[in-house]
Length: 161
Image (cartoon, rainbow, N blue to C red; front, side, top):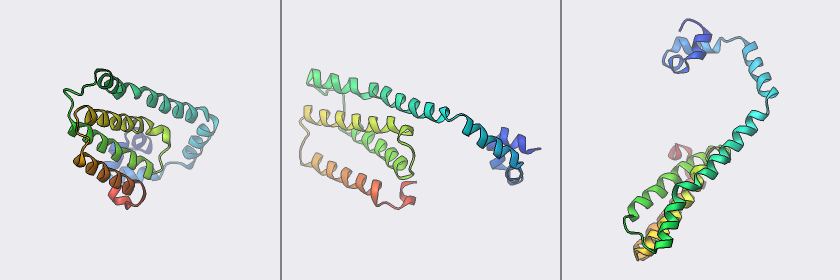
């Protein structure tokens, strides 16, 4: 990259080249000051981003809630498998644990938190209507709860990353 401004225009290229990354460190201090002034002058941008995050979270209610409503209304979980919902619950929980443990604002991961709760609800409905709420299900549920508790509280950071 020829200049610091070119490094800013293409961050991926700057990371690929050590000399370009060095150019980023040589940016004039006035650019950093201007960036801070711009951020201070527009506090509404953070507020807008936060509310948009929560709006996306509310929209995520439309992902699995209709499935749960259909299963409950029809009193049947035909066509749905427990393994799918266990895997969905596990994957969303991993994403939630990562965001929580890294201290991200709730508005940045509220949608996956809502989807996690929805996946748990659908999982319980599927297990109930397929008459699979048995000892094996309870064992998996306890294992899941233990793993989620560990990931949210006691896991070393390198285990979460």
